[in-house]
Image (tube, rainbow, N blue to C red; front, side, top):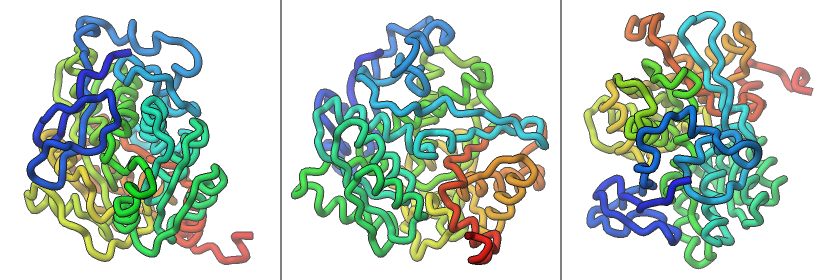
Amino acid sequence: MPAIAYLECSRCHARLRADVPQTLCTACIDQPAGALYVRYDLNPLAGTSPLDVVGARQGEPWSGMWRYHAVLPDAIPVTLGEGWTPMLRSRRYANLFLKEEGANPTGSFKARGLALAVTMARHYGLKKLAIPSAGNAAGALAAYATASGIEAHIFMPRDVPLANIVEATAYGAKVTLVDGVISDCARIVGERKQAEGWFDVSTLKEPFRVEGKKTMGYELVEQLGWEYPDAVFYPTGGGVGLIGMWKAFDELEQLGWVKPGRRPRMYAIQSTGCAPVVRAFNEGAAVSQMWTSPQTAASGLRVPKAYGDYIILDALRASGGKAVAVSDEETFASLKDWAAEEGVFLSPEGAAAMAAYARLIASGELKPSDRIVVFNTGSGLKYTEVIADALGLSAAERR
């Protein structure tokens, strides 16, 4: 496993030490301060083949996403079996692949980022972690914190899916429900963390959730034979997964583990009821503006402003991709279609991404020959009340 050479600011490119816990860049003159990237000395891996390096350590704890230990921090994993999720080929679209992140522990892609963040929190000797969450990150932090013996403090909007509240409570986290949205939860964490002694593991306010999420990039490339797809569709709230995959592609090219060629076009999928990145992309803006009164049944997309919006927008433009907004009506039509026709119970966020794919295929912007990976970021089973409402199930039918 590589030594961390330094932490690099994504805004001002200052280098910070990595032997102590860090949050945001302390050298940024302009605010908000930049999110930090973990940088490694990759020279020892130069000229290697991924077939000789990836998965070289066998068995637990080096399975799942930890098969990429050669490009992850040198720490003993806190693991519940996250990663190496299925890549499902569509029955109807020959070149469409579904990356099924609902197969992760706690039922969502959040397991990857929080597994790495908690691993490093234990490595640094931290005792209390706090997080604002739209739902799935709460359950993931609660689970991994319990597995590591660390205290978890979770703040969620009161109207998140019931499954998120139940699992975080069952894992023993200290759960606070907030009247508001995730930005209100983040404000509370920010106001109280110093007095309470919490380390903030909010989206992009520590550097290691990106490292966990970047394994999705390594994984999809490996599962496609160490080749890039033509495009990646990613449901984007905070956008850490998109940012992590873009970082993974950079590392893969440095290592020479992918064939030369254009990186995938990146598509950020949001809801028409909360689309700050879409609006900023269409306006040619470098950052997004806070979305007022966000409304969508896809709770993971109800993020009024992503902290790393500037990174997301840069990746979309550099890749030749775009940001796409999908209505809840389109989302639930897609969800029902994929359940009935493909046997896959998508999350609303994953269904929104599939709806965007179908729209761009129909418009001719994408060709049937394009090889596309669409992420289903969580299991539809975590949204049973929301989906029951969308399906029009009566109270009697729910019993």
